[in-house]
Image 1 (cartoon, rainbow, N blue to C red):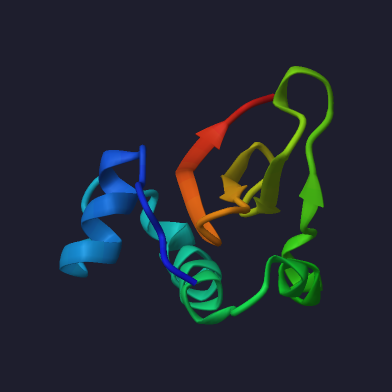
Image 2: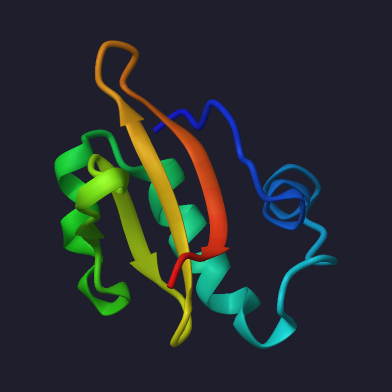
Amino acid sequence: MEIRNIRHKGLRNFVVKNNSKGLQQDYVAKIADIMAFLIHIESIDEVFDLQKYKPHLLTGRRAGTYSFHVTANWRITFRHDVPENELCDVDFEDYH
């Protein structure tokens, strides 16, 4: 699926330039796995197929944001632009 924008600078460099500087090195393999999966899905419903990273939708003020578990606190989050069928606001964040 097309990714419109990536907020986290380190994650953006990793996806665009294959440079992991700015990311926690212990988790680069997990991050790579999640990002490769997101790039290759065709439908947003496929997000829930990657169960090993505990995909879920956030609620409250973050309703509509999807999340993948990377570490105890860190997540890859993103939104889905339905009309454009694109992922947007992809981030690597500690939202807890």
